[in-house]
Image (cartoon, rainbow, N blue to C red):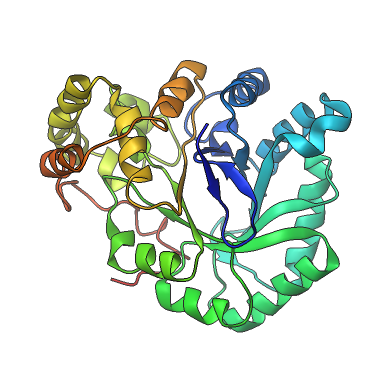
Length: 334
């Protein structure tokens, strides 16, 4: 498995990781056994990075990972580079999300995450969403103190703007920024790809196969309606979903011509966009996970990249990537 460095930490991890949101029922029904099969396959392929969060299944994803690690005995601390996140809260009465980046909250949530994972230290800790009422400099100082205390190895931020990243990096070294990035979401190329490269910060790309649109088996309308996150998502509602599936036919045909699955080609394209980019696809299927891994070692030529970006040019997707509610907390910068 190809390796990439995480920020300036000197730590090498696999060029792709596992997005553990799929270890819950977020995109459809799954089980702990299915998730453990993914983790076993990851070890076989040399995939060493797992990305999770305290809110994935209200801690379920972390518990599933922790249960797998507990079975590994003394080897559990050496098997994976693990990242988790905190910062999103939900109002008990209204159900609406809000954000908390206070030291007390972040420390309490980190301790809960470590308990679920069965670890005393996390490799990478993200602010899942920024609290607009807390200066980024103050949040960075909080995270820097956690590094100094030995609870976390490094830290990062999810869905922040380039300007916010520069402010944070002026206070302390930032290891990673997480953002949706794929052939269907090219907005990071309007500043975030460049800022992360400039600062030697890893750009960890979630949803790298467009939540199925960049695969050989895109979700049907019925499947999307059964998934809580996709049901309100504009790209998976009528008439956008049909238009998006039609728009990606040429990409699937090109992948077949090149000799890859569409998902593998989407991963390969992303890895070729910069040596600091680390995709973290999620899946409930071992076979699909193997497809994703196969995209890592494929070498694409400049002509391959041109053809890919011709068949799926910037702006091809129908509908926004988030609903109005889903946009809350993500920083728009273009």
